[in-house]
Length: 181
Image 1 (cartoon, rainbow, N blue to C red):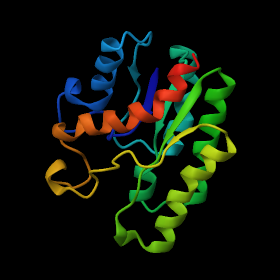
Image 2 (cartoon, one colour):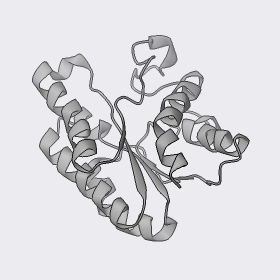
Image 3 (cartoon, one colour):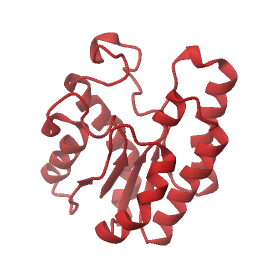
Image 4 (cartoon, rainbow, N blue to C red):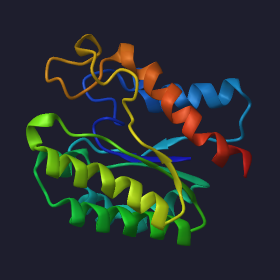
């Protein structure tokens, strides 16, 4: 299993073993699931950066499942949602062409980005998932994204206390992919 994301997946601001990706690997092992987990997430990564490195990463790792968590940095930089959608779709297509099942993970922007931008941004994830017929997790931070005490002082990055909640969300979304191996 390959996790391909940004700082939300790279354990930003905490020890790597406290991040949700490491906790997901622990859960897989405890359930005797036949997966190892590679975290190819890079803090600050955009969908364009992810697209630029996806082919080499897929060739090197040959994942059965790709968990794609990119787009947050596109949004924080105010990049066009249409371009983000195009990049995400290309990453998903390349992963599928390489034989991987994909879980596309959505993220949301703070309200100060404006209603129109936020709608387009969120819709991009859902549209890619539908068009590429892939598994989809609407919001990585579902159930706690509004709880300030679960975020680092920057109010963007979840604390180590929030990481098990992320695993819970990802685990549920991964269920159909894990069963079809």
